Each structure stands twice: as structure tokens, then as C-alpha cells.
Figure 1: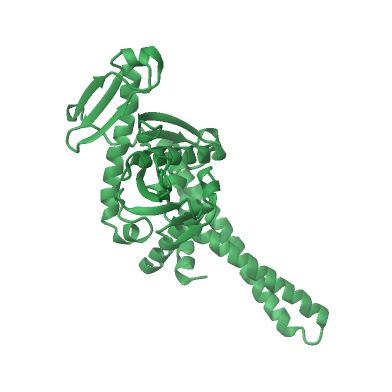
Figure 2: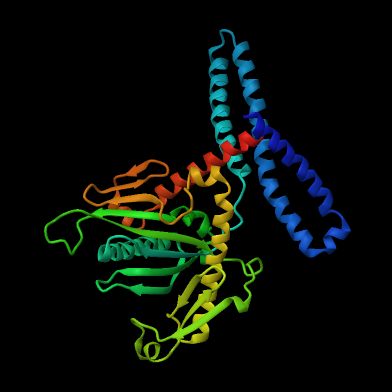
Length: 368
């Protein structure tokens, strides 16, 4: 095990002893908020401590087996038993070290949050809008596979059935999976290369969409917006929705004047519900802007795996003639584009997560 990992685990063990003492104090037990904070930390550290104890045990087993191998002499049965134990201990130690490394990585507190997924058509006109619809379908299918719930918050349809812009809220429901933790690496520019349905001469066109994944703010921790900083406009909704939605000024657009950030919602049946939904999206966008500005100061994070955070970054190419899907950040190419477009994103997301974890581990080792 790398020295910096062992040192960190030793510090965790020391902190766990401190928490055992603190949680036994009567004054802490009477302060419920403090008690819950310390209890959560204790639970997290207990898991790491348990795996580290097992690691230390298997280290001892390995040393004993290696000594047995040296002392076995001409006893073939003893030598074979020792070799089996050495192999078993080495395999488990490798697995345990990988687990402990992941446990030591800094956790993003937003990983478990629901998300607002925004898809916007970019260069490419009608073909870009159609690709936006394809991306929406891909993410909705992935959400179904995960057992998540998805809800369209707002949409601006194109003439040919695509989307100029669409915003979807996705949450884990009862599955408990971290939506933001899985989807956060989807933000950026998505480029498609294919023959558009509008192309009469069979030529391949290149179009692009941008995707933004915003963690839905925790109401208790969300930024506070001054009502005087908001301009709220109402207008008549457009698109499908029946007579009621098209005959009343129920759609709401909210502009945050200091930043110019805008959010709108028109899918609800009342102005009140649309205003509440638009405000949630606006809050998430403002919070994401602040998050991006903070992250931009961390060159290692943004210049490494996920780029600058600018939505114009090209992170991915979908090449339909070749059936090729490529993520340019980690140089991963998969020739299974059709299944990916049906929501089979597991392999891609796992690779992105592992790449991110590798960067975090490298940063921990440098700073150790």
C-alpha cells in the first residue's frame, strides 16, 4: 500500500476514536443536530476502518504464508498450501486497496442530489434540434434503466419534431441512487456526424448540441435570491397541452437581473406551479454558475477530466456511419452507438468515473 494511503487511514482510525468519545458525551447527545453530524461521520469512517482492519489481517496472513513457503523445504503438500494462501492473500489485498482508495476520495456532497438536465440545439439547424431530441430520448431511457423518475420541466420544440431547448428533472425516487454523481460528466458539447433526414444527396453532416447537468439545490442549503433581483414575466404557453394551457397566461419566465440568467416553465396548469418550477431551475442555474466559477480556479480539475466547464467544450462525438461513440476527455471509443442511444450508458459512465477517481488519487498523493 502506498505510504500516503496508509498514513491517511491511520488518521481516520485516530479520528474514529475521537468520535467514539464525543458521541458518548451527554452534551453532544442532547444537541441533536451536532449528534447527527458526528454520527454520519462516524458511520463513514467505520466502513473505512473495517476494510483497513481486514487489510492489515490479510497482510499478516501473507507474511505468514511467505514464511511457510520458505520453511516448507521438500514438503510438496505444505509448499502447495503456502502458495495457494500467498495467491489468495495477494488477490484480496489488491481488491481491498482499491476499495480503500475509493473510500478516501473526497466526496461531492451533491452526488446524491436530483438533477436538471438541459439540452440545447447548437450548430446544425434542424438536424441539431433533431439530435437534441435523440439525446433526450437516450437520457430518458437511461433513467428508466436506473429506476429513476423524469419530468419535462420546459421545452421549445422545433418544426421537424426536435427541440431547440428542453429541460428535464431527474430524481432517483425510491432507488436511492445518486443521480448527479452519475450524470455530472455529461455536461459539455455533444457532436453528431450522420446523414440528416432532410439530406437528399446522402451527404454526412456534422451538428452539435450542448448538455448541462445541474444539481438540484438542497432547499436548506440553496443560495438565497433577493426577490428584488428578479423580473417575472407571464405569457401564453405554446405547444401541446390542450385548450386550458393555450388560452391563459400561465407560462412564467424569471430573469435574475444581476447575472442575466433566465428560466421559464410552461408545462404546469397554473401560473403558481410554473413560477415555483421556474424558480427551482433558476436557483440551480445560479448555483451551477457559482460552482463553475469556483471550479475554474482549480486548474487540475477542470483542465484534466472535465474541461473548463464551458458548454461549448466538445466532449463527445456520435458517428452514426461508423457506429462509433467517442469521449474525447478520456480517449474512450465504443462501437456500440445503437445500444448507447437506447440508454446503455453504463460502460461509458463507469469509465468516466474511474478516470475521475484516478485524478483524485493522483491529487491526494501530490498533496500528501
